[in-house]
Amino acid sequence: MWKGRFTQDTSSLVQQFGESISFDWRLFPHDIAGSIAHARAQLNAGLLTAEEFASIEGGLRGIEAEILAGGFEFKTSLEDIHMNIEAELTRRIGPAGAKLHTARSRNDQVATDTRLYCRTQIDELAELMRGLQLALLGQAERHAATVIPGYTHLQRGQPVTAGHHFLAYVEMLDRDQSRLADCRRRLNVSPLGSGALAGSTINLDRHAIAAELGFDSVTRNSMDAIADRDYIAELLFVIALCGAHLSRLSEDLILWCSSEFAFAALSDAHTTGSSLMPQKKNPDVCELTRGKTGRLVGNLVNLLVAMKGLPLTYNRDLQEDKPPLFDSIDTLALVLAVNTEMVAALELRAENCHRAAADPMLLATDLADHLVKAGVPFRHAHELVGKAVAEAIRTGTPLDRLDFAALDPAFPADSAAVFSLDRALAARTNPGSPSIENVRQEIQRFKAADDAAR
Ligand code: ARG
Image (cartoon, rainbow, N blue to C red; front, side):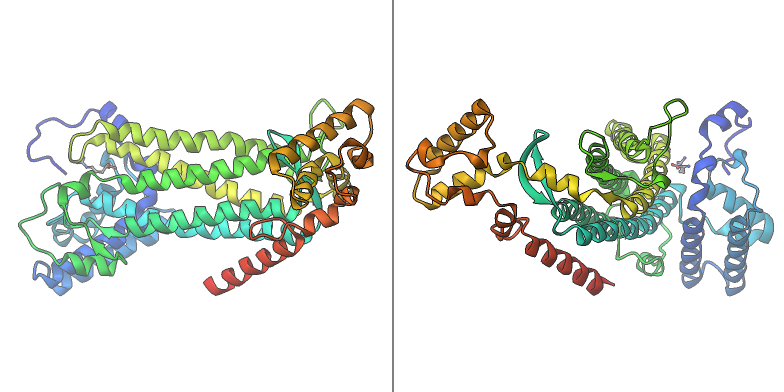
């Protein structure tokens, strides 16, 4: 493609070192859409005849069909997807193919292709996130009234419902989707027409090209447009954060499925056995989700480090943006799909959950609140209940069986009545709190919002 200036061929080692076709081939539908839009603008500018445009469009569609059918032969010597397609087009249609690259560089071409690719993938990831949300909502609905201990520091804190716990992850995935939408909005700008870095002396209608490709607008600075990979960094961050959320879910499920907790059981289809220990049922999907999140974070860091020292505008380092991008997208898509299946098939062991949550110590805070309602300042109430807890531990008496009146006259006569899980949950009616009624309302709200968004 640059043979004019050169007298030697590229060394085969350099070809092997510099090729990107082994991974950027997947940009092909976007590369072809971009080229057709670009050619149409050339037609409208009088740079192509109608026949030339038709043969370019037909040639590109033919190549696209062949790639889709798996019959296209990519050549490493042609380095990347852009040159593979253009060279084949010219081979097929002749002189008109050689006109396609007028007023365009691979620099604005690759920026266009990756934006279009990210946009498509964002839509698919959002749909997969929604699928996992629906699986979590299903569990929340089933277990809106299943009481479990809520933890801080992995120490039992206060009772909540399993439904409330599942809905926490629905919230995280809601934010992940809204971050995807933000990222999509910011990246949906057309860089085509920025050329190698300084636009072109040949004016094509950038707005028409942008409209044909579904972009909302055109980039405003050719140098920024060529050097910019912010949209990839943003997407890698959104993916890494979603991975972190699912890694936390994994950790919860690993704990819940241990014999020590015994709150839940994963299905046989989503666990593995041991080649040595016949009794084992291992939560590998959760562990792999946790492990793969390391890669997702690494991919983000990989790109940021590659970008940080680059002078404007294009530098070949930028070719290294694609392996982490593709890997993060593929990985998260699979993580979301497998977690959706696994969560849907999860069985909660409600009796065990309830037994763990029935520990009266979990209502120590409620007892302090009870004293507050009787006029005791909270710090004083906290201390009184702390003493009651110490007494319960010292004498081996369950907290709810203490003689509160004998401990301190500040305890109201009905203090023992605080130790009812039903009452404790029913009292948590503030927005965001885990009363069964709140959890049911939240489920309805999510479903209605989801219906409205369809
Ligand atoms: N394969 C290249 C990449 O992904 C395409 C752009 C090449 N541009 C250049 N000036 N060499 O970055």
